[in-house]
Image 1 (cartoon, rainbow over the protein chains, first blue to last red):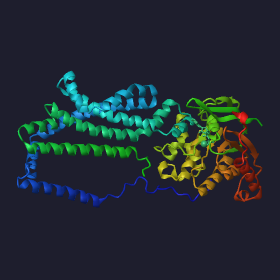
Image 2: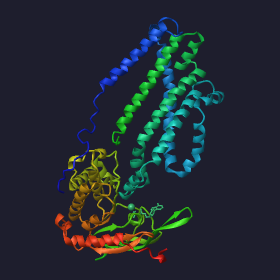
Image 3: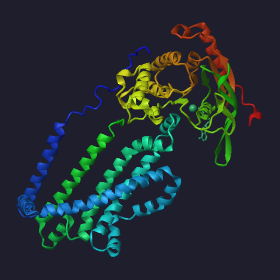
Image 4: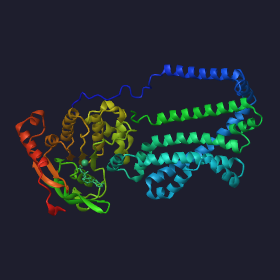
Length: 267
Length: 260
Ligand SMILES: Nc1ncnc2c1ncn2[C@@H]1O[C@H](COP(=O)(O)OP(=O)(O)O)[C@@H](O)[C@H]1O
Ligand SMILES: [Mg+2]
């Protein structure tokens, strides 16, 4: 075939990471420093009833040193991961079944719509009464939160797979199972990963709230205890831990997402 | 010569909210072995419907299509198809796209690679074998799709406006490349287009269809030699045939009432 002057659009730059944006990073850091400075200025006079940054830092060192912070974090993380993994592992097959089989969709849809309208936390009283005060009700609530978030995304992913792509596979000789495995699953991966990220976010939000209501350990429980003693530095340390861990988990998932969907055309 | 593809009074109705719509009305056509047939006609005249029935992606309401004497039921790798939207698998490289059908057929890796290599080379994409589709231009994507269709060794190629989304220059290049590929790897081709020039340039015969209901209007022989060149494209003979096709497409008599 004669060679043509046609050039690929971005073959040379494909896969090369974008240049790191140092300007933005500098501004990020400046913003954080400014925020801490304002916090310090406001609290130094004692006018606002909040702890000063050094108080929080001292408490952090204390809690980190005696292992308390680690134990609380581990307890919260363990619940989140258990509930989240169960939720996602169930959501993916259920989402696929709903997208693939009309019957499954019709059977599951009403429950999905209904439970989506109930904040997961509202299930806690029921869960405690029926499942006791141990780990089960908390994990169940987190499971529910992450399941609901991921199942919808998976289902959306399956029903939005391009019909032409499925037809292309069929004329190449693919049967239903092959189409599912080699076309539907990869094509819906980006949707599933978005769902998983939303699921993790809602699981993390739910665990802390669940611990505020009913727990004997965890970051939420620690805050609830600190509240009883007006122990503001401990509350601050816990809040920071929650925020930073949530951010770290989201970033980790985002990195995985980018790796797995490198093939997507981004505009 | 026994025909390769036979459309035997093929009709197709679509049910729309109770009423039924006749998209294709008793369409009959014989396509010879190794022939290049193009199909033109106004939008909605049932071109894609006829092609999809031949591909086995759609069932005929009436009549039937046979390929090599066997009635079509369901899609199969002996009938390759190429779509306007390329329909490449974006998560696979050019090579893996071309190997897709071979993998389904259970070919061992070495054989897959060998076959893929050959067809990637045939469409001129060797340099981009390991590229992802997103890095390719539209024309290159379609060449990859053509290699993918060829790789499973189909006896017929069904192409639904394959160059419809490309700019005019790329389109002309791909027409020449397709004809060259076809001359080296001869297959029976049924090629849909809405471009009268393209229809005449590529074909042994041009099938003109009419709408409401979708039906065969006229079959026009293209009595021009291969290989087709720019000289042929600009010749008065070419112009004469193009004018005939143009008239058949754009000055169609109103539908026969009896057809409904
Ligand atoms: N799945 C479908 N359901 C209902 N009507 C359809 C469907 N597919 C095609 N049609 C109708 O059938 C007619 C022929 O369609 P098509 O074969 O796609 O036309 P062409 O490819 O010639 O533009 C059109 O009027 C179209 O609206
Ligand atoms: Mg069409």
